[in-house]
Length: 442
Image (cartoon, rainbow, N blue to C red; front, side, top):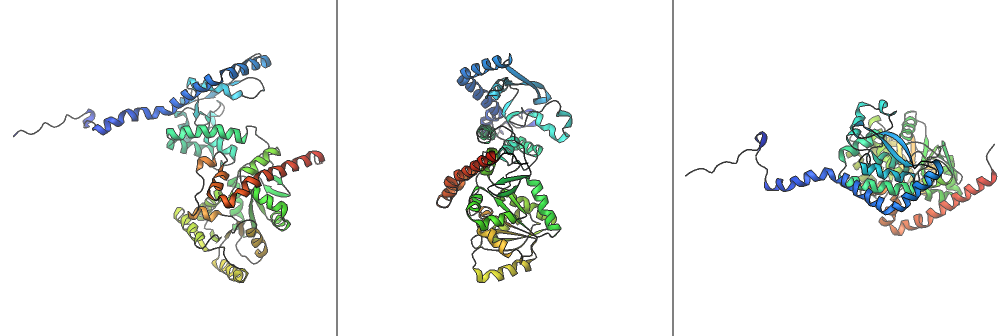
């Protein structure tokens, strides 16, 4: 009986593709082109939709400057120079002209920031991957910087996006860039070292510098209290003098939340980073693991602090957790709790018992506590224990994490955000009015 003839090998000795592979091949060819297709179609649609406005904007630019476009030379894909277009003049809508660059393929909606020719010689060899893709109108690093979440350097952020972004990520970042621009504004404001809000001085710093300060305090064994202030905290401090005095006496108060960012814009101040405790905590754990600093976690429901500690130790195996305890104890147990913290030898104490209870408790017992740095962290342990999921990154990148918090715990959070945020902004407006009436300081 004759044997069946084996299939003829394909090129380079490969067997012919299976039927499933043949079905996937068209998709594999189309998939890399989806971002460009989105850019082209969306830009053409916007040009068609907005052409009367664009014509008017160009006409007004010509009346003002005798030219329609201002041109800026930038370096794009494959290090090719191109002229980025903006409408001339000082009227709004200058950036709409860049839609023409997108149509021509010189820019994408999302991608690394386009560089000037002067920046090119300053790039390290590790940064040249960015020239394999089109530069974007929206850069993830720039978007995060506007919201105050640009904790990592531009190279690292671009590198991660370049090697992990899908077509879905491309579309999502493009949309977030538009929303983020509307929420954060475009004008860069001067950043002063101290932000003054409702009688509280807040240190205007970066995430990296805040971690450096923290480590230096621990190494020098300088006992310090560190707190975070969001609009809800400042509303409470405005009404409760004992809590306000605790914040005023602390070694450092750090800015927390998009509400502080908006308040800074109202006061014509620039905020460097949104150093909220939830983003600060894992970076502190990484720093502590590398430097041999130990942590004690106090607060939350029974078992929650322990679960948060386990999650961080799984992420950073060298991290030393000296101890944990829940936040449900009375005054009779306080001496035992404090003794346990001191006997643990912890360098850092994190207390998550809610505002203002945690700050008042720390201020009251600071003289008895031996850890070098003590800080209040609110509901942080709930997030890292897995009890309450945190908002996805895309929600945080447009400054809307507060909407997620309301959805998670509407009964507890609606008053803080729906009532509290407008109240805070009204109080900031009053502060600005008072400052304008009193005139500049001499």
